[in-house]
Image (cartoon, rainbow, N blue to C red; front, side, top):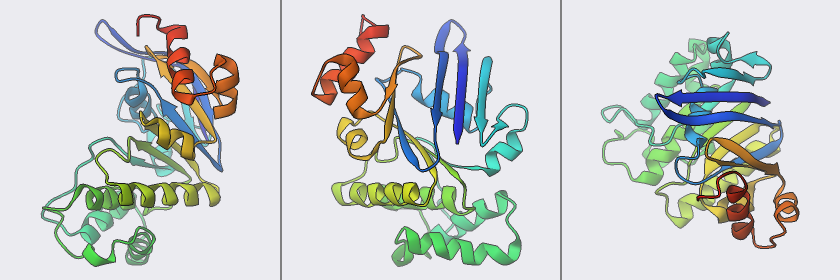
Amino acid sequence: MIEVENLRKSFGDVKAVQGVSFTADDGKITGLLGPNGAGKSTTLRALYTVLKPDSGTAKIDGINVVEDSVAARSRIGTLPHGSGLYPHLTARENIAYYAKLYDMPADKIDGCVQTVIDQLDINDFADRKTKGFSQGQRTKVSLARSLVHGPQNIILDEPSNGLDVMATRSLRELIRQLKTDGKCVLFSSHVMQEVAALCDEIVIIAAGQVALHDTTDGIRRATGCEDLEEAFVKAIQMVAPEL
């Protein structure tokens, strides 16, 4: 479970996040939706401890990400936007390296690495160096790294960016399976179709603030718009009329 309360983060005069609050529950897929520059990635980076918020709190399974960042990290798997792979390591070696970073017992690493390789259908290229991988292959390996330690909470920042249709379908199936397994899945996207197809709840952020947090049907009712894209635009304009 992920809890965010009154989170704030500024970069000089730029107020990237201004009092964001929401909860993402176990066994649900929660989408973080908003225009470019809305504060989505800044919020996610604070959650996975890359950025320290100026104020407010963020908790992973009740663990404060600032007060005990190491314990919080052990409960999350993250796929940052544009995450890189070590090009001279194989896919398997990339995943195993992250397993070691998570301080997994040495006698369990090989088995856990093979489990995520099977889960993500990576066997065909598991023992190739990642230099020259396609975007879909790179995303699969990056996702495998984030799942190898069996985290309860999964944070994905625009995971389908650059993927073709088949790779996107495969990714969606995996996200749905994580939900079925009782995981808490939080991901950001600006693709309306993806959000509508996957999410139990949607948090719409604009100008660093939460405009709406509800189910897709709840957002339609709140905005009076049957079309989700129109509802999204109206929700944004509630807090940022200039957009």
